[in-house]
Structures are given as C-alpha cells and as structure tokens.
Length: 278
Ligand SMILES: *[C@@H]1O[C@H](CO)[C@@H](O)[C@H](O)[C@H]1NC(C)=O
Ligand SMILES: *[C@@H]1O[C@H](CO)[C@@H](O)[C@H](O)[C@H]1NC(C)=O
Ligand SMILES: *[C@@H]1O[C@H](CO)[C@@H](O)[C@H](O)[C@H]1NC(C)=O
Ligand SMILES: *[C@@H]1O[C@H](CO)[C@@H](O)[C@H](O)[C@H]1NC(C)=O
Image (cartoon, rainbow, N blue to C red; front, side, top):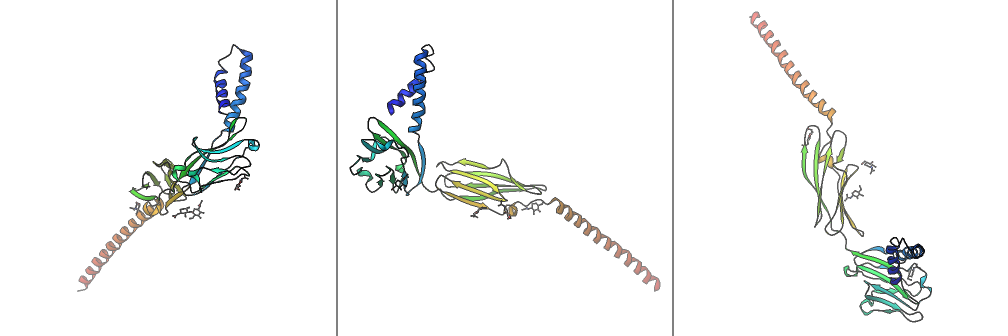
C-alpha cells in the first residue's frame, strides 16, 4: 500500500506538469486519481478519545481481511500488539499481555485500562500479496477536567445600568467576562467567551436564561459552575419604579412641609384669638 501511495502522490504531483505528453498524461492522471482516491480511503484515520483507565474497542470495518497470510495490530508504527496467522492462536506481545483482547472472528482489538502513554496511532495491517493497512485510529487518552471556580470580580452600578465582571478559573487557566443589565435584561458583552486551556481543554463562559455558566470540558469529561443570582449582584434597573420612588419622596417632603405650614398658620391664628379673648 505504501508503494501505491507514493506512486499515487508522484503521479498526482507530476500529472499537471507533463502537459506535452498527452497520452502519458491522461493515463497517469487516471492512474493517479484512482490511487489518490483510494489511498486516503484505505488509510483514513479515525479519532478516538478515551478516558484514562477505561477501555476502547478498535474495529476493522473493511472486508479486505478475507484473504491474507498474516494480520497485525500495530502501535505507533513500530510496536506490535498482536499478530495472527489464520488457523493459529493469536500472539499478544509481552508488553500487552492482559491488556489486549483480539477477536479472531472480526479482527477487532480491545485495549484495556488505557493510560496516557497509550495515546498514539493504532493500525491494523494485513500481509498477503501486498501489505495493506485496513484500519487506522488516532487514540487520545485524556484525564477528567479539573473543577472550575466562578467568582464576581467587580460590580459597577450607575443610575441607568449595572456591569458585573466575573472570572471563571481552573487550576491552569482562567477567563473573564462582563455582563450588563439595563432596565429589562442582562446581556454578555461580546457574547459567549471561550478559550482553549493550557491542557487542551475548553473553558467557556456564557449566559443562559439569566444564569451565568462556566463550563470546562474536554472530549471525555466536563465540569461546570453556575451563578444563578446575577440580579442580586447586578439588579435590573427598573426605570419606572425609580421615577415613582423619586416622585414619592417629593410628595412626602411637600406634604410634610404643607402640614407644618398649615399647623403653624393655624397655631399662630389660635394664639392671636386666645390673646384677644384675654
Ligand atoms: C467484534 O467482536 C467483538 C468481540 O467479540 C465485539 O464486541 C464487537 O461488537 C464485534 N464487532 C463487530 C463489528 O461485529
Ligand atoms: C444599584 O443601583 C440601583 C439603582 O440606582 C439601586 O436600586 C441598587 O440598590 C444598587 N445596587 C447596588 C448593589 O448598589
Ligand atoms: C428560564 O427560567 C424560567 C424561570 O426560572 C423557566 O420557566 C424557563 O423554562 C427557563 N427557560 C429555559 C430555556 O431554560
Ligand atoms: C447549572 O445549570 C444547569 C442548567 O441551567 C443545570 O442543569 C445544572 O444542574 C446547574 N448546576 C449547578 C451546579 O447548579
């Protein structure tokens, strides 16, 4: 197969250049295209993410496996996990004893208790008339993501809007975001905020239905913290009720003033009457 890929690539590169030799070119184009189409198909890599300590089943979908002399599962090109000669018992390499289960029915391999070192490329290869890769997996082993902390940094409250800045942090990364509340709703400045952490996970802060959510995830796990009471820290500014309250204060002050004035007038009047009576 590797020969055909090289040939295919050579032809792919060469083909457009050789404009003069038309007959050769068309042949090589056809051949090249055939090989170009076939090559990625047979060696397409499937990404698989596995949580540390868990198992994974790598399967062979191709039925090229019908006729072959020898079958192997390889890791990172040079390490053989298991070899199989039809009619014999499969042989598991020393380093993989107890960690690999091979199925002679469908050639799948189960890798058990995966650790970080097991991340890499796994290939199923058959040898017969020629060598062929019939399955290829890029396995990535990941640990669970760490917990997150979501804390308010600062609140700036003015008469017509309120801004709340929060920081969401993990053990190796952090992200900040600002939320603004006006008279009706709260919104996130710049929309959803997210970043890739130093350990390759994703850290995201977003607003959902009035709740600030900080979400930390990789392909195998996630953790989250919510801040539900955004309006306790940053109240909606009810413009109408503000007006009403100011109006109320004015009314009360005015009424009290009026009552005092009236009572002063009345008492002065009464005192004059009393003096006249004497
Ligand atoms: C292949 O065999 C394994 C082990 O017996 C089984 O778990 C798996 O489902 C099989 N896969 C297919 C595609 O039949
Ligand atoms: C923010 O301002 C509003 C209106 O001025 C007021 O009602 C509210 O109590 C203030 N909140 C804080 C936390 O200062
Ligand atoms: C938003 O919150 C309200 C009340 O808390 C609830 O009734 C509603 O279903 C929520 N909507 C979504 C999309 O979660
Ligand atoms: C956070 O919010 C989501 C959806 O609103 C909910 O499913 C989840 O249980 C909440 N988590 C916490 C820790 O409150």
